[in-house]
Amino acid sequence: MEETTVLTEPKKLYPYQENAVNAIFMKLLDLPPSANILFQLPTGGGKTIIFSEIAKRYISKFKRKILILTHRIELGKQTSEVLSEAGISNKVINSEVKQLPSQSQYQGFIALVETLNNRLQENEQFLEDIGLVIVDEAHNNSFRKIFHYFENVNILGVTATPLSSNKKLPLYQTYSTLIVGESIPDLISQGYLCEGQTRVFDVNLSSLRIGTNGEFTVGSHEQLYTQAIMQGKLLEAYEEFGKGKKTLIFNAGILTSRVVCETFRKKNIPIRHLDSTFSDKDRVETLEWFRNTKDAVLTSVSILTTGFDEPEVETIILNRATKSLTLYHQMIGRGSRVLPNKKTFSIIDLGNNSRRFNLWQYPIDWKHVFVAPHLYLEQKYKDEWDYELENDYDMPPEIKERFLNSSAEAFIVRDQYTKVVRQGLRPQTVIEYSLDDHFNRIKDNAGSLDEALELFNLLTEEMKFRINQFGKCINSTKNHNDYQYQLYNGKLRRRLMNYFVE
Image (cartoon, rainbow, N blue to C red; front, side):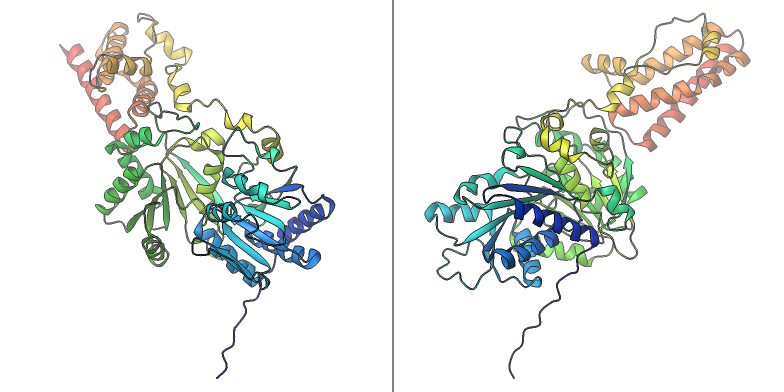
């Protein structure tokens, strides 16, 4: 029996994708051969579908070949499949492809940037008759090193975040024009992306250090996020907002991810760890397990931010901090895919990232980012918990009037915490100092036990405030704060009763 090949029907473009294709292609027709375009569209918006349609129209119009550059094996395979669906005969250039003696049968090529760079260094004519180069994840500067091999060729870069990973090489130096696609809020309102529900768990990031690349260092991340109290906070966040849902956890370091994996396993939660040291076989097996396991959790490091698509993911946990707007959007975008029974997803932020960059779905003026990237790469960010800790509780005037016999000097939790740590004392000493302060203020302004208990009740909000401030200093969980408050409340009450009864 003769073997037949069944061709998959190409995916139909959504209206916003059709509009983007038309805008990009019209711009290509207007530009000279050496001009370059950058196209922005949020993760989950279908950039691969869009540039595959651009490739199809370009080949038809100009009768020349296209080259698509990527930096991940997974992206290359996915792109090849989409091009095939669009009817474009193509070849993936990976490490196994050493030569291409006959290229006439191909209309397009997909190449890993490092592999192609090696081939072009050996033979500058390695690829023939390329008219359009499409760069996936164009914010990554690794592509620039091979652009000089393609003179008088249009380059189309596509990215969710038109912000170069290197502030010394801004994207406007490579691309003359930026075309902005639909925004995240527009895609959500039209039903093409899920709405992200962000849950913020305050974390004291004062111990994190910034490296020469402008990002928080992996080492300082590992020291903070492997601590038992941070593991407890992560577990609490997951059990409150992610339990029973397919979940991705993003970490900065391998050690952290492995500790996370062990922490969750002890609670009998189905979880696996994945990082860039895994072999291709182990990576595929791990991702297959994740796809096929109900309510699975995958904890990873620097590997699932691009080239990974699992629409059933309902919870994204940022178990790290980042100063990269691009990375922030890449991580969260993994949960934004829409399914018939999935219209929302949870974003659990354990790195104060949403305060640094605003909520994921908040509209961004990408044209401004493109022309003034330094304002976004060099933003002087100070964690909000720092601001919150600068002052003590702002006591209402009518309550202040009841404590006129006390010192007006404020009890600043952060200052007390810094002092005891420098003295080598236990952090809990801050709570003991605070108890002394409250006891003395009540004692100095009350003439009886009844009056003391009345003043005690007036200080309830201030007591809660101080406990929460102390919790921020030590990165404690909400449950731990509640426990501390009950303990504090009971100790102060008993101390007052003992004093006034005697």
